[in-house]
Image (cartoon, rainbow, N blue to C red):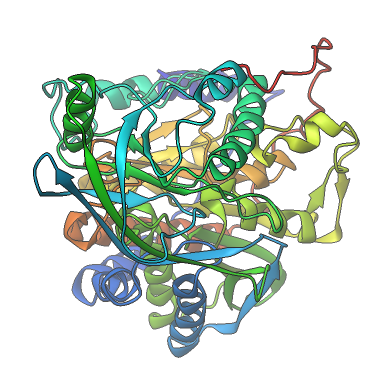
Length: 547
């Protein structure tokens, strides 16, 4: 175990005159007690969550709802007494999009409502439309050639029937002691429950190119709409983006994701040569008035080291199937509550504490990447035209890393974005110097179930851009709850799936971490600056008809 390894190093150091033992990381237990009292006895975290979800609803980047959320969070942080509350622009992001109606019915051979939602950045139907559902494979240029002349006025079922399996694990999960012990071991592996899959850059590029070609083809062939099955079963609709937010690009036809059980019925009927007619009414619109987006920021000013900064953040944007409760109103509410707690206690931090609520996370960490690029450091934009076509999270780190003056002033960034589950520990991003610090900061919260320091790296959220330029950026270990089984990007990502006790616990720990980082004598230790990505062997240009 990592902790035993750390303890062994400390014991060795005590007998070596060349390596004196490091002093124990100080913890202000009196402040921990005050933080716990305010968090548990005067929590506002669920009030914040109710407003973000029930009142504002889903917060797709570029939508009116997200702009309202930017305004409301700025106002709320300012009302709690934080200073410099503001919206910081980044972009361009591209076209906005919103929808307010999605009605899908089978009208033949029987009449029945179907559960389906449109993909973001696909057009509406401009009123109810009816068409025959046809199952069609459209995965290559050869498939498109074969389908020519057959799709006018049709609703195209793009996939085979979904495989419906009996549940093989509980729908609600918390880390076991064994899983946490595994996480405490150094390694490149997964988070203890979900294997990390390598990202295939070439496959992503092929999908993007063929997706554009398919959208243009469907419009030219006058197809009515497309339907695909949800990746989840049990009437869950897991939906994200389609179409295009780039001005001037084809957005295709109305693209729907349907509950798997309802989709399978359509496929079976079509396979049995029973004509299936659908009525679809989707009211969606594109917004071209403002291609930029905003991050919300606010501060508790520091004292003797106010020029240095400790940041805490989460992403404010969501997908549109539910109300973005666990992904990631939960993280935003905890971040805001941690700041409220510290402000209510009238703390006087040595370093400035800065709250950041990011946008564009779901499209590739865009808001946090833009902030890091503007304030801390960046590499040059790729010159390779193929590399430019890849989404930012798949691009290789190339060229020299240019650092800005604020790079030396950020002490640490703490992120929360793994749903409603309670904090069980923290990842160090393989920064071994962080281990004894985090162990000391977690010790007062053992009774709340937070004990694990993992010297592994974790990805896929807004601490990654900080880590990519050599800054200490960290994500907490959280219980899954039902994040991956029911709520992640689905129509059930709503207030009712939130766990109040977990949110209060997470707010307590985050407030303590941020406070102690702001009060440290030294800036938080850093890893070496990251290297460039190694060159890759040249590969042939991907073909558009590759699956």
